[in-house]
Amino acid sequence: MSGLSVAMLSFHGCPFARLGEGDGGGMNVYVLQAARELAKLGHRVDIFTRHHDPDDLEVVDIEAGVRLIHVRAGPFDIDKGGLYERIPEFLANLTAFHRERGTRYDVVHSHYWLSGPVGEALSGRWNVPHVITFHTLAKTKKMAHAGEVESPRRPVVEQRMIGAADAVVVSTEDEIEAIRSLYRMPLHNVRAISAGVDLDLFRPMPKRAARDALGLDGENLVLYVGRLEPLKGVDILLEALRRLDYSPCTRLMVVGGSFEEGEMLRLKSSAERLGLGDSITFTGSVDQHELPLYYNAADIFALPSYYESFGLAALEAMACATPVVVSRVGGLKTFVKDGLCGYLIPRRCPDPFAQRLDMLLANPALREKMGMAGRTTALGMNWGRTADGLADLYSGLTGAIVESARGG
Image (cartoon, rainbow, N blue to C red; front, side, top):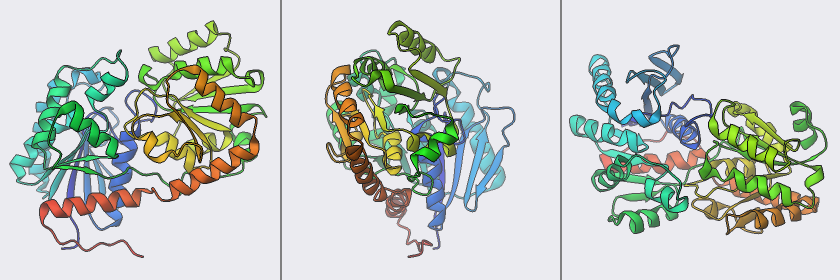
């Protein structure tokens, strides 16, 4: 057998959605990169997502062995909160597409809780294994940040999927512990396979060249990259900036979000109230292929999240040899080695963030040393390794003997 045929489900998040806006984030990157690397191994991957834009083609050939298939399910502009009721429509239209095309799949891999019921149904109809990756868990988010609002259905669905799926893929051992302690479920079907980073895209480049490309001057630059939501703790970063000894010559750049989003408007208002309006740049979301310029232009990358299941943006910064100052939470503490490639902050409050930022801003040699250590760590965490782990899992579940197409 030369390779497996995989149906990946990403119901609410298209892999081509603009990152940093709405729900576009690490999961979108994971789905696309894992599919591409699985194709390099000789497998075929179809990614099914909701038809969210009138200009979407039904079928997009991403590259050899990888297709993106848009399935109609509700209005284009429907809020994520209304998607659960659209699951039957998504399932029916996906099934119709499958019946019309006659494609055979060996495994179904669902991403996020909203995809889980679809994957469960297809697994039964097609008599193939069902794998699920949640990316975040409702109970973990609620525990980390009391203000989080989640659908009451979500933890119920997650609980059922953990028990019913043939395999649950998590990125870290920390997530395994969360499932054990918060969901009180047996762990026989849970497998830790680390997420990765695109080392061809995210790599070091001269800081001056990156800054020139972005039109930046010689100020100290602290960078945040990610969605804008309270869970990400950007408020902590605003307060930390105000406490810096180097505050007068330091700029905070916030990459992500939309200028129409309520959270960006709230953060801008907070910045003005703190007297930081002239020291903060909100860029909105940027194209994935532009992000290396921002990481390389920055002196420090900061991520003050209350919770991160993995923390892909921090790993991307490390791959660009930029030191990181991040919360000691979730997946971040599994690959950010405190004092080696940056700092892990145990308390989600401004003072310890300000102290570590000041320490790095005062010491260019330390920044360079930590940046190179981060790059070394990232070199061992590429997406190819993620795909190898997924392929081994799929093969074990299907009983298939698969010949890898990866050379070397």
